[in-house]
Amino acid sequence: MNKAYLILGGNQGNKNQNLKNAIQLIEARIGEITKKSGIYLTKAWGNMSQPDFYNQALSVETNLSATELLTKLLAIEKELGRTRTNEKWQERIMDIDILFFNDDIINEPNLKIPHPYVQERRFVLIPMNEIAKEHIHPFLNKSIETLLNECMDELKVSLVTNEQMTNGQ
Image 1 (cartoon, rainbow, N blue to C red):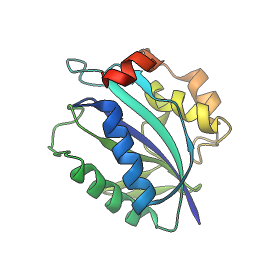
Image 2 (image 1 turned 135 degrees about the vertical axis):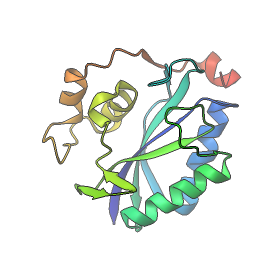
Image 3 (image 1 turned 30 degrees about the vertical axis):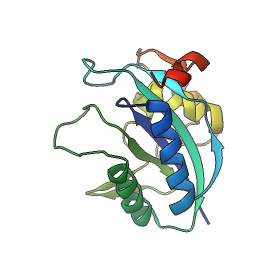
Image 4 (image 1 turned 135 degrees about the horizontal axis):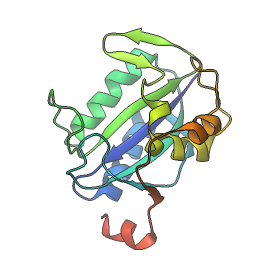
């Protein structure tokens, strides 16, 4: 059994429902979700002239290989309405990234694990800290908690309120 950590995010449509839909598809096609962070409201990273994101971290147990996992996650994104372009940091219905896969270090053209920007993004580190603060980054040899404490990213990341969740805003 493999253990993967994922980060989900989206800033189009009903963001709360989009996360729920992604989680249902992950449970049906990927494996058992063993931990879920709260849902976090995050300012857009990279291209800030777009709506805020909802982000959530998951721990998943799966029989899939890392490559198979990536293929299935891309299919889930597409099924939920994501259209990929060559432009980075654009609005999207759903983005699902593999942050960690066991303690593997994978450096292939279409698959980099650990995700190369984990340590630079509070919107990843804060939800990951909630579910796996002692997880050790296999390349940097630091815990998620340490990476969060050292992170220079200043974008605001806050738990989504019940009111925001009800409105999907």
